[in-house]
Image 1 (cartoon, one colour):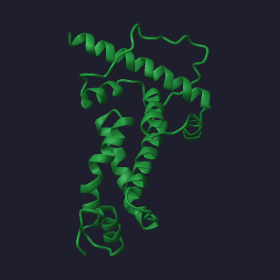
Image 2 (cartoon, helix red, strand yellow):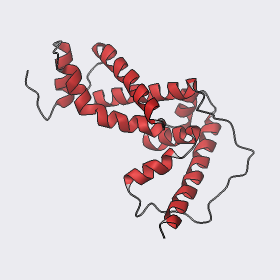
Image 3 (tube, one colour):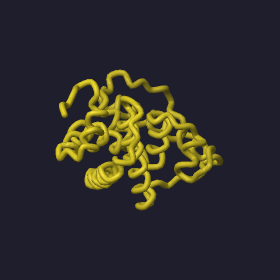
Length: 186
């Protein structure tokens, strides 16, 4: 079997179906950076991130025979969902995902609306990483993953209103972090 540039996902799936010894290495080499980036959005500690990734890859490798290829991008999406679910499970088990209703608390708004102009991707990721786990999780699920508050609520076992308030607070806290960062660079 030859490995082609255009159908990497299908080629990798075929390697697994053929019980090719290179299958795991090809999958890992192709997708580890992407899946690490996803995991890092939820898990802040490096050692814990490595543990979550390892567990995710174990699940991917042991369940890939049940995966149904549905076109380019389907393998990537399936693996991303495994990493997200594994990350959320780890946060819940370690009780690092405190999500409570904040509807009665006043919202702290930044004095000015920040822009991200001049902030590189790595710095922005570090600022997001400073958010409490609950805020960071809802922010990622809503903005990056594109889930609705209803979907987030179901996934995290909370009310949709709690998801919305967590998102609102995370945006405000992130705005303050951005402003503080920009002020420190002046």
